[in-house]
Length: 238
Length: 243
Image 1 (tube, chains in turn orange, cyan):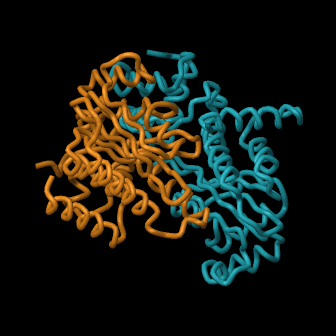
Image 2 (image 1 turned 60 degrees about the vertical axis):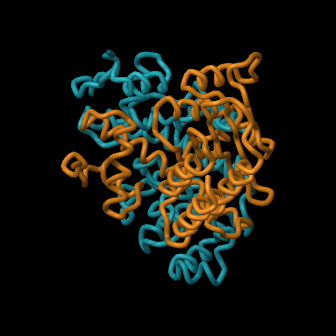
Image 3 (image 1 turned 180 degrees about the vertical axis):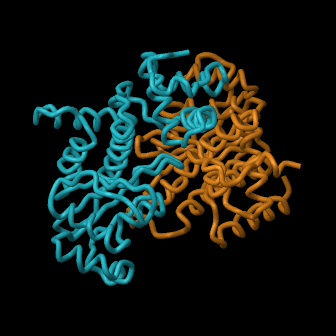
């Protein structure tokens, strides 16, 4: 990873933050950039909901296997541990025994990963979730990479809270709910498309994202329009 | 950890209703919210569009008055919560900022005796049923715990309302699993296309199918997503006819 690449990534993220922005699209962009910049094989951003469970709000791919790995960490696993302690958690060899979370590790190995890392999404004393990184090769991340990864996690947090002062309880609840509900909209819209066009969930997501980008609209707005039937993506696919 | 928040809130709502010899409903959950969140009153407003809506239930006169004001004026925390789909928490109505934000609602709400209002949308993605509105006769914010409990109660009330509005008896999510799994939302979207109905009814039908077949909703949702199960429009009136 070059200095120019890294600079470009942060410029792009900062650009996104300056304008009014779609938190859902931002989380996906950030997950994508984690993969490019940190030389990891998959990335996801998880936020805690009011049930105290972690929900994925952005992923570098919508592969079902990867989403299942996030889902498995709802209540326990490296991301929950990271969220609770506010500290980084790394499992550097998922294939070795014993494993602290054997179900999670087995599923991760099955999906082709050998190591997993979780970094806290934290602003001052408040932790709101975790950045989850997967690599196909075992081993720890280079300390320089970890510092950049934590910077990306910080950008995610600031983006989500839109740099507002979070002493105001309303703003935190509002921003978290916007991101979490945006994700629900997207899952519902994926289901609508999967059934209507007989595509898989990953393809359904790419169609939503592609349409939102090419029409310069929020992905959550497109999702809502797909669900209520006001746009029909089948005619827009080239 | 608060993964057990739902279980705790459900137990509170059930005990509260049992203590008054009632069975659990969206109304008794609303009554329980007043005690659990330590507010003066609560009301549930049903809405199908930002400008329409009706009061479903109110625990006191102030709550009823706040709903009348929303209906008449079309502004206020409840109207905004429904429109934006996220909570609107107002710890002190009588501030310059809030007078500017809701110039007609605030003076009238203060007259009615409310000093703080907290509105939580009854929402799951594209399913938007209305709002749970809590109020206090004194100023002051909700704690982080109270906000989290309120969000959970709003989820429970949404779930109960879906049953009540469609007369499909599913009851509380007894397995203690929040309705917040990705597969449940995906399956809801798929079922809405299979049955040619809105997502709200699709979720009801998914839950009814699970209930009739004595299976967890998440398992049924996974079957739908894996295309092992389709719901048929013909089963509409008979939730007991399974796959």
